[in-house]
Image 1: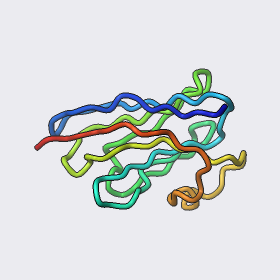
Image 2 (image 1 turned 180 degrees about the vertical axis):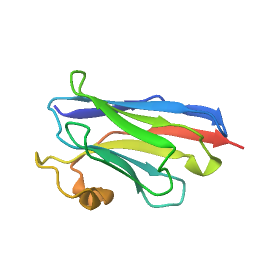
Image 3 (image 1 turned 90 degrees about the vertical axis):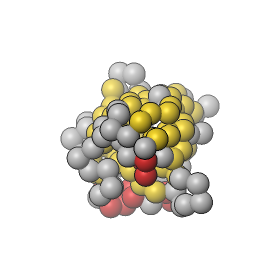
Length: 127
Protein backbone atom coordinates (compact mmCIF):
# COMPACT_ATOMS: atom_id res chain seq x y z
CA UNK A 1 0.00 0.00 0.00
CA UNK A 2 1.43 3.33 -1.07
CA UNK A 3 1.30 6.09 1.50
CA UNK A 4 2.58 9.63 1.86
CA UNK A 5 2.55 10.95 5.40
CA UNK A 6 3.32 14.57 6.20
CA UNK A 7 4.53 15.91 9.52
CA UNK A 8 6.10 19.01 11.02
CA UNK A 9 3.30 21.52 10.75
CA UNK A 10 2.32 23.82 13.57
CA UNK A 11 1.59 27.33 14.79
CA UNK A 12 4.43 29.81 14.46
CA UNK A 13 4.93 33.56 14.34
CA UNK A 14 5.79 35.58 11.28
CA UNK A 15 9.50 35.36 10.56
CA UNK A 16 9.88 31.91 12.12
CA UNK A 17 10.92 28.72 10.38
CA UNK A 18 9.43 25.24 10.06
CA UNK A 19 10.55 22.05 8.38
CA UNK A 20 7.94 19.75 6.93
CA UNK A 21 8.64 16.11 6.24
CA UNK A 22 6.87 13.65 3.97
CA UNK A 23 7.62 9.98 4.43
CA UNK A 24 6.71 7.71 1.53
CA UNK A 25 6.09 4.01 1.86
CA UNK A 26 5.12 1.23 -0.50
CA UNK A 27 7.29 2.44 -3.38
CA UNK A 28 9.82 5.07 -4.34
CA UNK A 29 9.06 8.15 -6.42
CA UNK A 30 11.36 9.81 -8.90
CA UNK A 31 9.56 13.12 -8.44
CA UNK A 32 7.97 14.56 -5.31
CA UNK A 33 6.25 17.83 -4.71
CA UNK A 34 4.56 20.05 -2.17
CA UNK A 35 1.28 21.88 -2.56
CA UNK A 36 -0.74 23.98 -0.16
CA UNK A 37 -4.34 25.00 0.21
CA UNK A 38 -5.62 27.92 2.24
CA UNK A 39 -9.28 28.17 3.32
CA UNK A 40 -11.49 29.19 0.42
CA UNK A 41 -8.67 28.93 -2.10
CA UNK A 42 -7.58 26.39 -4.67
CA UNK A 43 -4.71 24.04 -4.04
CA UNK A 44 -1.52 25.67 -5.27
CA UNK A 45 1.90 24.43 -6.21
CA UNK A 46 4.77 25.13 -3.81
CA UNK A 47 7.82 23.12 -4.89
CA UNK A 48 8.97 20.00 -6.72
CA UNK A 49 12.16 17.94 -6.77
CA UNK A 50 13.51 15.15 -8.93
CA UNK A 51 15.20 11.95 -7.77
CA UNK A 52 18.75 13.27 -7.59
CA UNK A 53 17.74 16.62 -6.14
CA UNK A 54 19.50 18.32 -9.01
CA UNK A 55 16.27 19.72 -10.43
CA UNK A 56 13.93 21.77 -8.29
CA UNK A 57 11.27 24.35 -8.97
CA UNK A 58 9.37 26.74 -6.73
CA UNK A 59 6.34 28.95 -6.80
CA UNK A 60 7.29 32.61 -7.09
CA UNK A 61 5.63 33.33 -3.75
CA UNK A 62 8.06 31.06 -1.85
CA UNK A 63 11.23 31.37 -3.93
CA UNK A 64 14.18 32.35 -1.79
CA UNK A 65 12.38 31.42 1.45
CA UNK A 66 11.51 27.73 1.00
CA UNK A 67 13.85 24.87 0.12
CA UNK A 68 12.79 21.40 -1.00
CA UNK A 69 15.16 18.48 -0.46
CA UNK A 70 15.01 14.72 -0.18
CA UNK A 71 16.72 11.76 1.47
CA UNK A 72 16.25 8.77 -0.80
CA UNK A 73 17.65 6.37 1.78
CA UNK A 74 14.75 7.37 4.03
CA UNK A 75 12.27 7.74 1.17
CA UNK A 76 11.48 11.18 2.56
CA UNK A 77 11.11 14.66 1.11
CA UNK A 78 11.43 17.83 3.14
CA UNK A 79 10.28 21.41 2.86
CA UNK A 80 12.34 23.91 4.82
CA UNK A 81 10.29 27.07 5.26
CA UNK A 82 12.04 30.22 6.43
CA UNK A 83 10.82 33.78 6.93
CA UNK A 84 7.27 32.56 7.20
CA UNK A 85 4.48 35.03 6.52
CA UNK A 86 0.80 34.97 7.53
CA UNK A 87 -0.08 34.36 3.86
CA UNK A 88 1.80 31.04 4.08
CA UNK A 89 -0.96 29.75 6.35
CA UNK A 90 -2.46 26.66 4.71
CA UNK A 91 -2.67 22.90 4.78
CA UNK A 92 0.48 21.60 3.14
CA UNK A 93 0.28 18.44 1.06
CA UNK A 94 2.97 16.11 -0.18
CA UNK A 95 2.34 14.60 -3.60
CA UNK A 96 4.02 12.31 -6.11
CA UNK A 97 3.42 11.38 -9.74
CA UNK A 98 3.37 7.70 -10.61
CA UNK A 99 5.71 8.11 -13.58
CA UNK A 100 9.46 7.53 -13.46
CA UNK A 101 10.57 10.22 -15.89
CA UNK A 102 11.18 13.78 -14.74
CA UNK A 103 9.40 16.04 -17.17
CA UNK A 104 9.89 19.81 -17.54
CA UNK A 105 9.19 21.36 -14.16
CA UNK A 106 6.29 23.40 -15.48
CA UNK A 107 4.38 20.14 -15.86
CA UNK A 108 4.47 19.61 -12.10
CA UNK A 109 2.86 22.90 -11.13
CA UNK A 110 -0.64 21.51 -11.58
CA UNK A 111 -2.32 19.07 -9.16
CA UNK A 112 -3.42 16.84 -12.05
CA UNK A 113 0.19 15.81 -12.63
CA UNK A 114 0.21 13.91 -9.33
CA UNK A 115 -1.20 10.46 -8.62
CA UNK A 116 -0.50 10.12 -4.91
CA UNK A 117 -1.31 12.56 -2.12
CA UNK A 118 -0.81 12.75 1.60
CA UNK A 119 -3.50 13.91 3.99
CA UNK A 120 -1.78 17.20 4.73
CA UNK A 121 -0.32 19.05 7.69
CA UNK A 122 -1.55 22.41 8.95
CA UNK A 123 0.79 25.39 9.01
CA UNK A 124 -0.47 28.52 10.72
CA UNK A 125 1.57 31.71 10.78
CA UNK A 126 0.43 34.45 13.11
CA UNK A 127 1.29 38.10 12.56
